[in-house]
Length: 102
Image 1 (cartoon, rainbow, N blue to C red):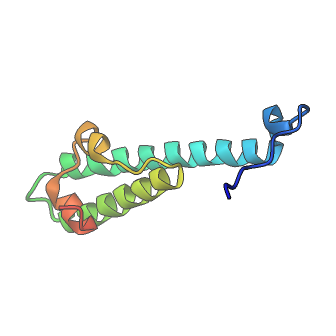
Image 2 (cartoon, one colour):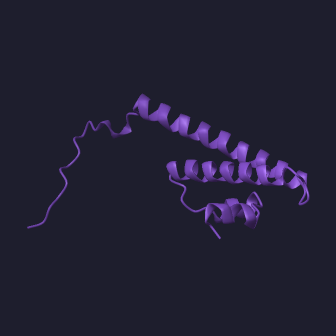
Image 3 (cartoon, rainbow, N blue to C red):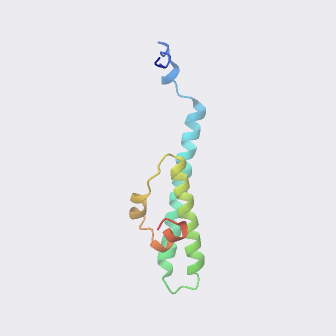
């Protein structure tokens, strides 16, 4: 016995966009953009501070937190591979190590 999905009715609502789903997708995209901007900003601050900065530990924590939040938001949007982002944002190994990524 084979199982088959029921045929779609000819007046299928598949082409109709659900306004709630559209709003959720827009919010996910907006949150992804904000998370990416924050990660970029924190990484830039970390780079600008230099290795001997007294604020380095705090900046490293902030960068790791921001990158982690960005990765989570990407995954919520269905983007599960981060290799390209790691290269594009030039995320230092010391940040990735705090995430358990390396």
